[in-house]
Image 1 (cartoon, helix red, strand yellow):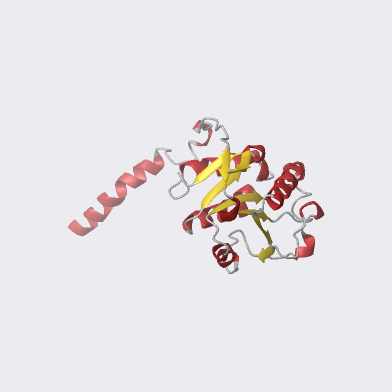
Image 2 (cartoon, rainbow, N blue to C red):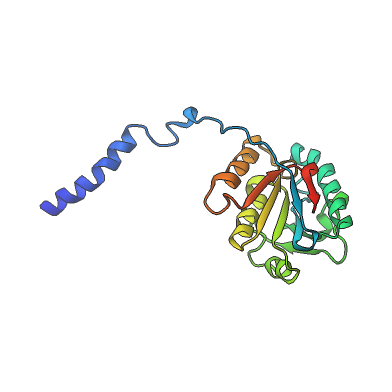
Length: 206
């Protein structure tokens, strides 16, 4: 009998907590918007930096107006990276082919294209490719912010790399998704302190 009472006492506080409406669903409308983030300038070393362009495909971009609007900025970043001798690598979704990458940001023959789900390291040669080129910093762009960008950002940090996240190069179909990814980058364990939030025109060479 005493064991039954102990078990009941253990679960009672959690039951009361839930019934008092203290879960995130009940408090949904009480959530406050985080303080606005100011993108900061960042300088990179061309020899140890790579630009990742994730899932900018004919299938994924047209259905996301913010992605369509971001392509010219990402194209400028791509041209800048190539001119500066920065390594460039691409990803495509599992249901795609390299030919589906938007012509505005089409990969060159010597640029790696990996195929994966949201984590572009999983089951691909991306990590090996970056390590073979002594890459310690990655600039991550692509769509969607809450998908490929977020997962690959986390994957990069786990592998000991510094991440540069230009907010005008990570479009989604939802503004909240982009906002959340910025919050995660700056506050979540692992990414906090290892991700620099910036804008494309604030990235320059050392």
